[in-house]
Image (cartoon, rainbow, N blue to C red; front, top):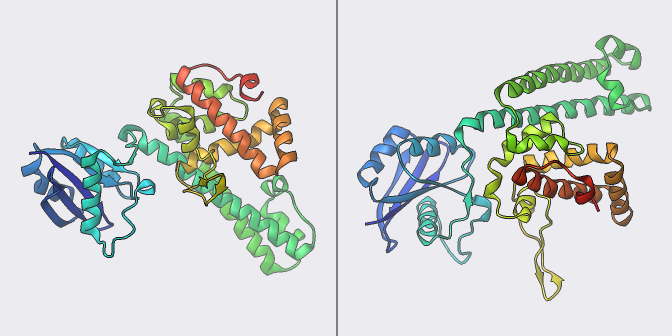
Length: 338
């Protein structure tokens, strides 16, 4: 008898379900989030279980990794692409788990990528760097706002980056405002130190693999962005076409059309937000330093606006990077931006 499993995972517990080929429930229980206990409950059925689905919630690592190590075939459900029948009057954790198991049995499960455990921690270090960079920017903008609000003059980002605490008293007449700026400045300096540490450790832990070394030939992509693209992409062969990769990078628009008329939009946030950030960042650098890309950007901007134009450049770079990673060839700006 073939069985199909699903686990509806929560922060402290989960609902585990096994169904057979007729969609009959063979096992269904709410269990604590204890890997040894979950495995003990599943072990009598292990030879019959064809696969187990877990939703890609924030806390899936320990469960998927642990059951894979015990020999189970695991599937990660893409939660953004799963929808139950909207006419249902009542749903709960049990029905959610059964629905996942049914989609696995029918071969209709929208699957996410189970990133290799070996490199996941390093990838998450780069994600932590991105979080700290955003916090650093927030503190920098706060300093700018405080200075402009209280003096009527603006200060550039580069000037603030060079600012020291001793200068603040002379810039701002009110002591409390000066204290607020010095506090932001202190936090910003602390974040800069932590960011530098994360970058150093990441570069020690992982190097650009052969398939990704040509990313450094792309206009606007340096070492950190190349490592981000490599670690967030994983195996490039999991993307069947360049369009799939561009969509995963959130570089493709989402809209629903019927009879030539717009009927709304789809899930615009479906995809990898870290790759989306990386290619927008690369686009901004490329526009600054590569003349042919800057001309492309200016043509797009004249027809729309700066945000749309930068996204168009990011889309071009993402498509180019797909072929660079797949075929292991250097970047050709003439082919990418004709």
